[in-house]
Image 1 (cartoon, rainbow over the protein chains, first blue to last red):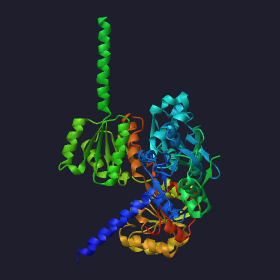
Image 2 (cartoon, rainbow over the protein chains, first blue to last red):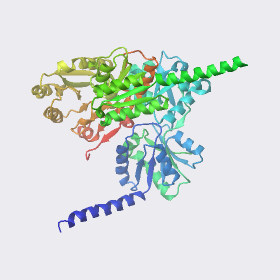
Image 3 (spheres, rainbow over the protein chains, first blue to last red):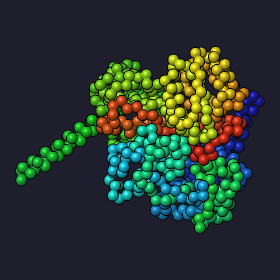
Image 4 (cartoon, rainbow over the protein chains, first blue to last red):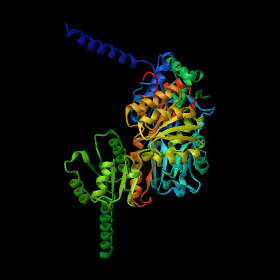
Amino acid sequence: MKRFWPAFFIFSVFVTGGYWSAHSEVRPTYYFYNTETNINNFATLKMGFDIYLVNHGGYLLQPFDLRENFEKVIHEKKGDVYLLSSWHLKELQQKKVPLEIALVGTSKGNTTQRKVLSAKKDIVNVAMLKNTVVAAAGSEEYVHSILKQILGKGQEALLKDIKILIVPKDIDAVMAVGFGMATAAISAESGLDKLAMMSPNQFKELHSLGFSEKDYLLIAATLKKPDQQETQLLEVLRKMSETDAGVANLKMLGIDGWRAVQ
Amino acid sequence: MKIINFCKALILLVAFFGSAGFAQSNKVLIVNSEKAVYRYETIATEFKKVLQQNAYQWAEFNLDGHANAEAELKQLIEQENPALIYCIGTQAYSLVHNVAPNKKMLFSAAINWRRLDVGAGTYGVANELSSAQELSLLRYFFPTIKTIGLLYNDSFSREYVETIKKDALASGINIINKPINDTQEISGALNELLPKIDIFWIISDPVVLSNKESVRQIFQAAQQQKKPVYAYSDVYIEQGAVLSISADIATIGRQSAGLAMMAEQDKVPGGTVQSPAGSMVTLNKCALDALKLKFNQDALDSVNKIVGCDQ
């Protein structure tokens, strides 16, 4: 009899755990991966979203730290709604992945942003970045692509002579210039606004050497025209900005709301 | 015709030996104080990733895997003749400094690097963010904070506290600091300090943090007087610190690799020691809510970890 209860306990845990994990797999899910940050606050993000979503459809958020795994889920058509960067979406669309934009993230009323290459004022042009370090947040592929875009065809050859230092977030990149760990930084324009708030003197020392094209902030996409379930998922996302708890979760993603694309 | 062929062969030979020579000269030796330490191993892994992307060669030597590390390391250095030796941890640096004092060296994860003998051929990435970085970030997360208080021991932390005061002045923040000689003075010092400040800053001072009781006293007093505590490490989050900001270890590895390549090519001045470029921010939302502290909501996308009341 003594052996029965521990065995029963293990059995119960196994069965219920198996049931819940199997159950959780079929719950509609938001799949998230962002090429523009290395912050990796996934546990926090997942917990924040899942708590919010308990009372808003019971959906789940599944963040990814590896691009391959996120794309695997898309290829397996497991997802219902995918949250990703505009750059990543375009990359996938070029590979004929039929993702379509459903919602775009907003921040202070804007749906788009530019990336800016900034340096101290003694660096008067991009040619002076040869053999220097440029700090940026995001995946290496993304940063390389944005830098190439900013440099333009005329200065593209410089790419091989620039060392890119990948840092966790925009504010680290812009601060790295001020504190001498990098000669220049690539950040969103909002990254410079943050620096102005944190360290006005450092901000005054910087100037812009170039800009990327304007691009959407975070995107919510689906693999096809949204069906009923996907429409519900998107509606929950869209309404997140109506509550404090929802906004707090969105702020972790660097946005404060969602807007439908016309 | 023969002369042309001879010239072609000569060019090929020069190219072959030239490239072989270059490959030899840009080899890096990584000396790790203890492979089993997660922090050290993460730094080493990121360092190697960047070297690989830039076609650099490397060899590795882990101090904990050798009975006679000094002699074996010496032999390896003679054998490999690396252009630069990357030392992870203070133990690795001290040993390499003794065994090969004339080699170019780069260190990271060294505790209190200012106490190391850093010569012209030495480069490094510090273990801690500079106080100016911490203050800038603190101001970003808590824009309303004007006065910060801290306790320290004059023998250990005087220079650091002077730097903090200088950096704070430049940021428009007022620092009220109180020196203590031993932990018996903590309680009295806190009673005097806490009513005058907006937030208490725990710095890495070995006297102030010499035992668990002194740490408990700090948090108890801060809680009684409803003052938030900011700490240099996330180990204090569990005890009630509202925010911690420390260096991101993966970035230290990548940054060290960049610095190693620049140093190897003599593109940075000898003796350069950089502050870490990446930060790791932990926010204790439970403590934040309890204190009703005003936090910059737009900064949430810069927080690496948020801890709630049930964690």
